[in-house]
Amino acid sequence: MTADEQPVTTAWEQLTRTPRAQRRAALEVFVSRELKQALLMTDQDDLPLDENYFELGLTSLRAVELRQRIEEQLRCELDTSVLFGLSTVRQVADHLASVVLPGTAVPRRREPQDAPGPSPEVQRQVNDLIADLYES
Image 1 (cartoon, rainbow, N blue to C red):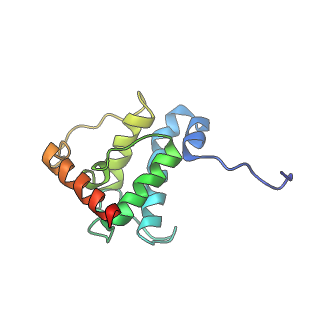
Image 2: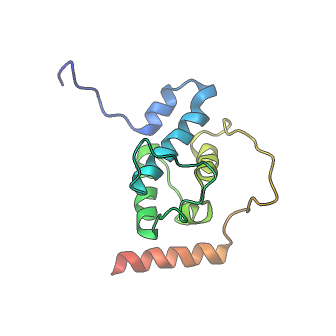
C-alpha cells in the first residue's frame, strides 16, 4: 500500500471511530447515502428522512440489494422484512441503531402513525417473494 492509498473501511468501522454522541447521526447519514444510491439519486438530491422510499421508486429487488449492502457494511444481519416494513430513512436508522449501536439509539416518543412493524404474515409473504425472485 502506498502512502496515498487509504485502507478500505466498512461503515461499521467508521461508526466505531465516530464519537459516541455522533454515532446515531452518522448512521442516519449512512442509511440516507445507501438509499440514494439504490434510488439512483445523486449526493446533491434531497432525500427526506420521513419520505417513503418505495413511493420514490425503490423496487423490491433493489431493496434486497440494499439490505445486503447494509449487512456487509454494518456487519449485521437484517430480517428480509425490515426494509419492507420500515419504509423511511428515519425508521431504518432507528432500527439499525438498536441493532448496531445498542444503548445509543435516540428514544423517540411513539407517534400514533408509527407502525409497530410488519405482522408475521407480512414477514412471511415478503420472505416468500424474495425467495421467488432468487429462484427464477
